[in-house]
Length: 176
Image: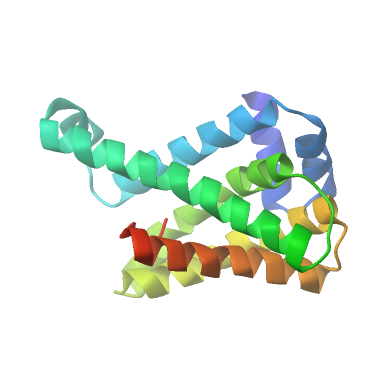
């Protein structure tokens, strides 16, 4: 996991080397899933949920399961919409698997929710503000993977987020 954390730091710093590694390393998909799960757990802790309490009661286990499922569904759906936008709408290249890895390695940026939720007493606004770094990381990854200009990569990353908001509204999911 040390190698994955090093590449996560590179991705969060928008360094191309991280995206090349994600493109060439199939194992990075599992690492991305671990980052999504750990980030969701840290967000829950930061919002005042006690993991011991969540793990020892039926309602707590239900909340924990739903939260982790929501994170995984966000990761998959967001990545799919971003991939489809980059590949088919904006005529880019690349693979879904690499976009999935990129968004998984970008997911820890959403820890900014813990700060923005206290600044903006509105979950939707806090999510949008906290998502800016996430979108920057995904944009740079899509730029590399899809061989798109930075502006077009940003459109694909943004469409992924808008698409997720539509899907989450339809399914009744939370935003992240």
